[in-house]
Image (cartoon, rainbow, N blue to C red; front, side, top):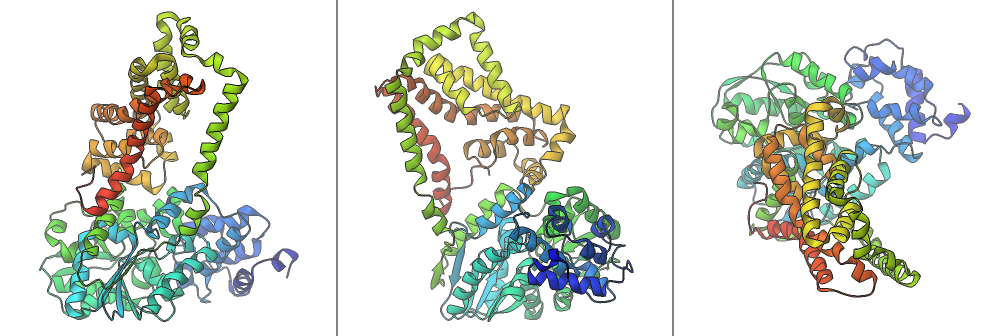
Amino acid sequence: MTANESVLRPALRAKLAATKAGCTDCGACLHDCAFLQRFGTPGGIARSCDPSDRSSLCRSFECSLCGLCSQLCPERLDLDGMFLEMRREAVERGFGEFQEHAPLIGYERTGTSRRFSLYLLPEGCSTIFFPGCSLSGTRPDAVKMILAALRESDQGVGIVFDCCLKPSHSLGRERYVSAMFDEMNDWLTGQGVTEVLVACPNCQTMFQTLGKGLKVRTVWERLAESGMRLAPVSGTVTVHDPCVLRGATSVHGAVRDLLRRQGMTVEEMPHSRETTLCCGKGGAVDLLNPDLAGSWGGLRKQEAAGRRTVTYCAGCVQALGAHTPTWHVADLLFSPGQAMAGKKMGASGLFTYVNRLRLKRSLRRMPWGAVTRERDSHAGERRKRVWLPFVILTLLVAALAAVQLSGASHYIQQDRLRGLIASYGTLAPAVYILVYALAPVLFLPALPLTIAGGIVFGPFWGVIYTIVGATMGASLAFLVARYAARDWVASKLTGPRWQRLDSEVAQHGWKVVAFTRLIPAFPFNLLNYAFGLTRINFAHYMLTSFVCMLPATVAFIVFSSSLPDLLRGRLSPATLAGIALISVVMLIPVCYRRRQKRGGGAAATQ
């Protein structure tokens, strides 16, 4: 054992030792794996592993963890387990944090939040349906139908909306996953739950790996056994088995049985069941190396050979759908007419969040929910940050006092600033608008410019010049992305949120622009470029941006126009009006979420 190996976590040390001893470098695992083709045999990777070298450990984050190498290994080595332990080692050493993973971690965090989670159990509940985040967001009606079918044969079935923590598990965040999953597991078993029915392959893997005292099965197995009546359809399909379930032969058979009972002819791809390929999203490789991830989707397209692909993972539908026509098995079971007509199935992007909130709201009305809870696992973290507004307020008061006591307020009087700008003559507004228009393109913050505009030009002209500059800036970034630097921009916006925006806009058009302007869900400057990659009409984009940016512009300009008076210690009507308008603008997202929770109306974007 080398000195470097002695400081490794025991789990990784054992995996490396087993691979070094067992791997014969035969190459059986290389043929179908782009990752191993790039980095070499598992034995070579194990022998060269240096825990002090960031790149040595972090190469594991380009492995999809699909397990095909372990399946093909003549020595039956746990190779994907070794790569997972390398990720965990990297996290422990502080090497495993990547900015590209932030959207995925945020998505997971949303799933475990109080707003999105729901535990709904009837009296004496021993079995729950755990649909997972993706199916609930993309196909909420299918979730309702599956639950109805399960409860038709067993009125004791409950439902739980929560996240299984598979994203963090794949990213090597072992301690966090253990704490979060154990809390959920302990609550369920404490309520008498003994069986979990899952619709997501990742959820099944997590419950089988970390669950204690819980039997885990898929809803597809239960539905296949139930003898449920299926609407007859005909056609030929091929099945993509999610890679995390390559060893789940009963699930493979259940899905194919449902399809055949419905009237479909199932033809197998060269890689299926135990030897299935990854769709490209495994291990979050698509976030770090989209080209590598896309190569797996390309292989699937070749093997599908023009046949419609059916899978039972919502994530796989999304990944494969970019390469070849793909259905979720729920599309055929519960919406066969739409599926066979070739209509787009499943929501994406922001609408998946809206769907999950609506689904939660509708199920809360069910009369059989005797035991309910919303998970609040992050409450402690929120409590740690309650002091933040007070700190900001204190700093603001201190800044105002410093300006007043130092006499600096004399230099920011509105008349003086206007005089300075007036030195530019009639070009002053044009200079301001030009600078404001360039700010979004250059990723400069707009708030300081907005405040300056209010102080210099006042509430009326300040609003006019600022909204013109902001609209020009948003439009210029849009045009740059669409015509001047499309490939470069596309290479930078590789996260799942950006990748789904195009299909979102294609379905809902200008409403997506309005939604994101009024209820910020993306960074403003990046969003301008992202819309340029979509197919939205430029005129619609520009007009919607103008209208929906106007409320915030008015609020901040009115407030900032009164700042000289405020800094001199005078509280003017404009100050009060500005504060009131800013409060209204900031409350728009809050009111929207409450409206969704109460069922007061449709989403702003629909």
